[in-house]
Length: 157
Image 1 (cartoon, rainbow, N blue to C red):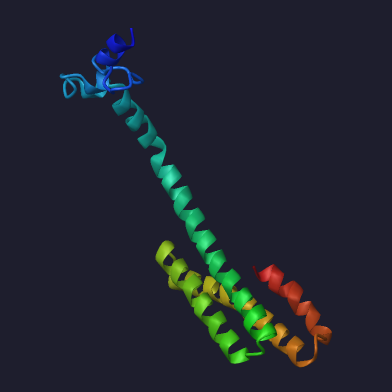
Image 2 (image 1 turned 45 degrees about the vertical axis):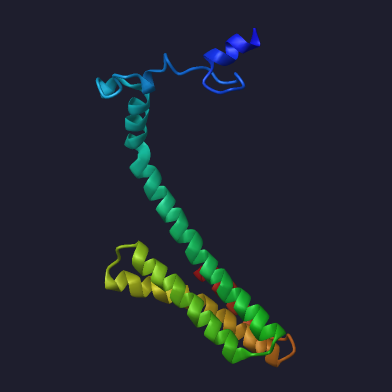
């Protein structure tokens, strides 16, 4: 009984069925293409693809920009606070802010005024945070009245 089922199957173990009656691989596959199920499914999915593609682009752009800003803060806290190297920390902050601004410029169509406004808002938060962190490292953790700037930094994000 097994020899007969293996002889009718396309694989030697008899686990797959033959494809003689599959519409997608029939000899007349290029006749009546619009009626084939997989073509219909692709055409239906294409109706919603542009919306999905736009959502994915926006999500990737926002996520990558936020990752660059995260690396600004990581560079600031690790290099400035742990290694006590303010120049290297500032260089890292500037590099990652430039990465975020480059992503902003390449992903969005903004007027020059909108770009400069958005760039200022992206750049000012790490700058204020860097200043507070730098003063904190100089005064052994006590920043005095500069604590209020932390609220401003959160608001500017």
